[in-house]
Amino acid sequence: MQTKKYSSYAQIDSELEILKIEKEISYQKLVLSVQKTKESFSISNVSTTVFDTIKSTFFSSYSAIFRLLIPIIIKWFINKKRGN
Image 1 (cartoon, rainbow, N blue to C red):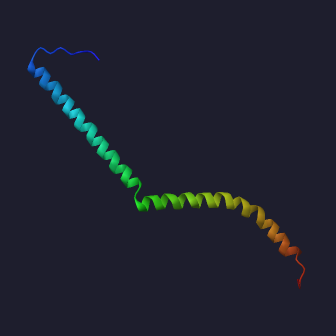
Image 2 (image 1 turned 135 degrees about the horizontal axis):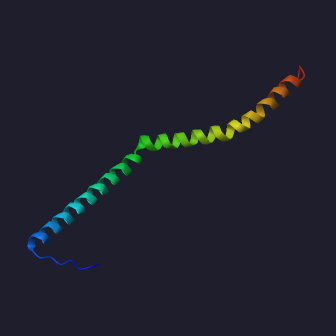
Image 3 (image 1 turned 180 degrees about the vertical axis):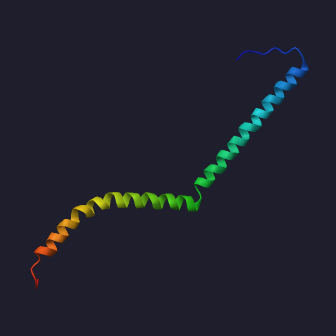
């Protein structure tokens, strides 16, 4: 990092003011990020995400199984002898 040379106290004060504002902006970004993270872990959001994941997993894997089993079950009912 290069050393800056200032010719007056006004330049130093303006540089310090800029750094102070940049620090405040960074702090506010951090606060906003923490708030968004808290919101993403709220009970309703987590439960919705879990429910959607379970639903998509269940229907994607079991729908293929059901598509294979339905013709087999229909054939079984058609070929089933009466009285058994």
